[in-house]
Image (cartoon, rainbow, N blue to C red; front, side, top):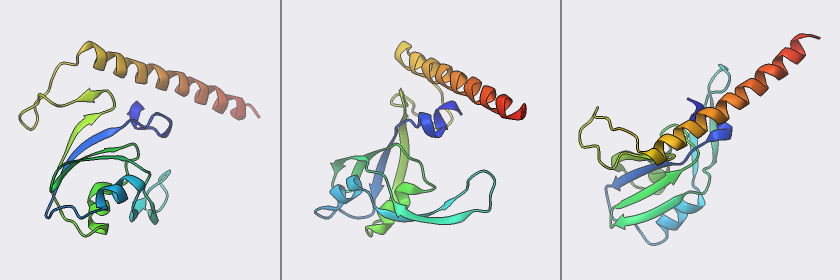
Length: 147
């Protein structure tokens, strides 16, 4: 959960296949950001629609109908909505990486892998950063609770 928090947002890497060949300029539009509507849920408040441009992202076209997208935000069904806004339907969508961890060698759904040293260092660093942040937040809350 630590790496999902706003201040620790980590890149998420997806492989995407759409129903038709990418048109000229659409990959660049995806890179620049697309206006989509998602449902924002914050602090257990009533969900409300949010229409806004997505943050710029990395997009590499791998084939006529296939690309790799790297997101640092994570709006609900974001890739599907970005593609739909340009007239494409997502046929396949697979997350292949998250932060410093990849799933390159995983073959079957539900399978797992041992983290290598680099991946383990990344996880440890995120956990330690989150622990420091949590302590600071607790100290701030205690300070206000005394008034």
